[in-house]
Image 1: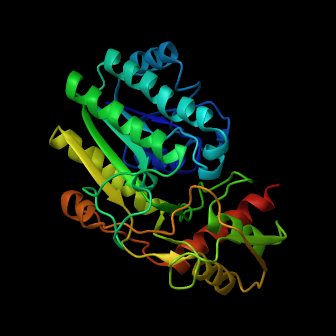
Image 2: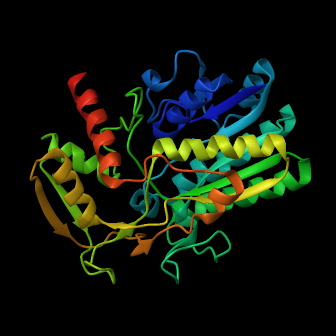
Image 3: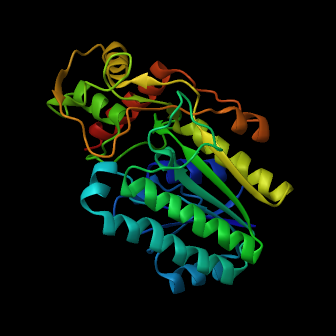
Length: 327
């Protein structure tokens, strides 16, 4: 059995590739290196530089390596960018997912694990959001992922492969062993931005919106450690192999932190009081979104190891120090 990890030179995909290699799986990573890093790919994994939208190339990779499992992480992920470039996001996230799915069907892939997002829900009507709640994306990013979910769900029903869709919330932190982390300098993840400010790599941190209907006026998000996230993916893959079918789960801890609370945590862990500026809201950002995460625990036996904001920040800070020291 061979697992193909798309976007495996990127942030979450590289953590997944390391997890699979650690489990003794045969792994092929495909990445076009538009935002990924070749150095993030585990040495034991086969690497192919290609675009997941190239159906012929993907089919060739799958056939050559005997791929029976696809874990799809390749995507564009910045919500404000999707508002200004919706066509680019629908191409990269939705059209290319359709091409990848077609190649997977032609290659006889048996398991497909899809990296989706809480952005498919938009602004929920309740404090926490469950998998059964309505989907109402407020950005082209969220819509592009929801469309991809539908494509894969319909293809799985028509062609008989098993499908797991994991909708995750705000991913943060880095590999505790220091093998990989969020390496993109311009990444917009809040914790990434904050630790760069703490290290003097940027002048300030901006808070986008201070008038939300939340406890301190700033947006609230459910932050999940990337290592716990890839463990959920690995468990979802095990479930599909043991009991073929379809699976949909939220991946979060079920608790939210505001932007101000995250900033305070980074200042506390780093012991640096960096500059913070207040800005207007950004389009496409909901006020609050927190997972109802009982399904992933009950159906997959998932037990997070790093459900602690200071730990997440400490791992992100350690990785940023490593990246900045290497130049």
